[in-house]
Image (cartoon, rainbow, N blue to C red):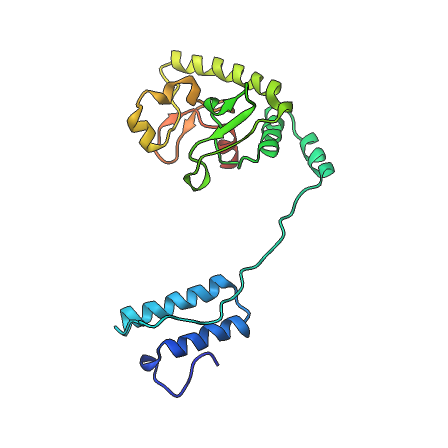
Length: 213
């Protein structure tokens, strides 16, 4: 039993809560997230329903966070996966594998430094900046989509378009940056499409568009 049956729920305090949480961890074998959810529910009930917030520190045994080893593809598996791709999508996969970028981290032209063979990602996951290496094997192959993308961007500008989405703060500070070449995506989509957040029709990143299909 999780809770004592000898006392009314309104009379239960830190001791009963500690006992319940310890039971969940030691005998219920629940995940840490489940135990934390039970703790938050109890604290909310005490403070908001019973109007008796608990002032004592809760010192229950904590459920362990699961420790799972990541599944990593072997070199042969990676090679066979890449061999199944062609064209731009193969290059994108090679880039993601070689640089460690995440699928939704949009690579822009300004992020590439061919001279020092580096990639600088601004405002990535967790709104953090980070720098990583540009694989030497991709330096030459990446120049082709850049040339194609620049021609595409020139056509967009000629048609009165050519804008890409930017972080809100940057868009407010530099209102013209959205049409500059350096802010364009390295892998732009072939066609312009409607941005689901704003409804604005613009050229989005190829891998984002593909991920939403």
